[in-house]
Length: 182
Ligand SMILES: Cc1cc2nc3c(=O)[nH]c(=O)nc-3n(C[C@H](O)[C@H](O)[C@H](O)COP(=O)(O)O)c2cc1C
Image (cartoon, rainbow, N blue to C red):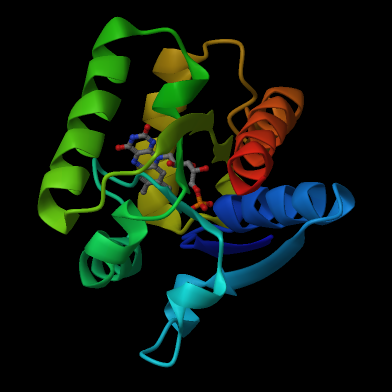
């Protein structure tokens, strides 16, 4: 089994998630190739892989352009193979029904725009990283996080990702692929 993990990351947290997932899969004895979507080109042969994990994060209600372009270019092939979409956001860190409806809508729009129907979707809580933001981003994100998480130290980086839950999800997805392959 060889799994491709392709990701887009603006501030680096989705890259960390993608690396973590790659280590998890490799640790389970499966083959894995990790690729930033910024490096994807026409030489990539999806036929080499038995499954694909795509990961990206939400910024102002949208995933990265590179993710949309890749999923759009390969929508048909991706839909025909086992796939997992790791959608990273701060909305997924909370339990606000409106935020979750927003995530559903962003996903629905993404699927409609790209034609890729992921076999499974994981909504994963991302990170608040003021140390990586420029002045504009810091201003916007401080306001959002102050509202959503009144206890948060607004000057400190904080990961909201539940790593154990992510591991459990990846293990479950991989074991599903292994069963299908036998
Ligand atoms: C400028 C900016 C806009 C963001 N917009 C949203 C948003 O609309 N919805 C959301 O849930 N999270 C939003 N986030 C949070 C990111 O999805 C979260 O920080 C994620 O971990 C970023 O992943 P990355 O480091 O891989 O880019 C935003 C973050 C930034 C910096």
